[in-house]
Length: 210
Image (cartoon, rainbow, N blue to C red):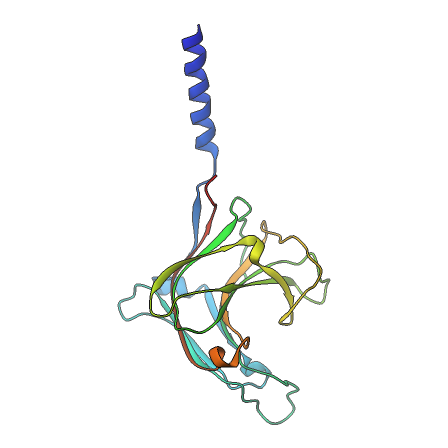
């Protein structure tokens, strides 16, 4: 009797484990030409800046290369931009991704010594109808010249509005992630202006093991 009950208990526990979500999930691989079709590059040019950026496969087609020139120069004319100097790559808006089973994003990257930001755009539930998405950003610390898997806890992402932090502390909507990206922003002119290059192999959602 007791042996039968113990056996059934073990079977139940094993079945419960089978229903747990995996500890990680690849969201965006970047090792094929078709992978890059999901991405777009943006710079300050549309606002009167002079920064340039490209996103291409590496020569060995093993990862993506995001590189360019970040400039603080502003075009003369009708533009009202007072400060420029940003370049970014982000996935095109698509069906919402639910990462609520995970508590961190992982970026496999090789940096160049510049400062980068990881970003997420989620369905808007905070700033109102003037913006379609909430934009969340966190520092992406990557070592220059070395491949690294950078783990960023979800709670590290801060809500921003036009590049500024939103002071009100709110919870991120991880059930409705619409886009993920990497940005070289003007946080520090010493690190963010001039040429840049960051290699990206993949982006995953992961869960810290209990």
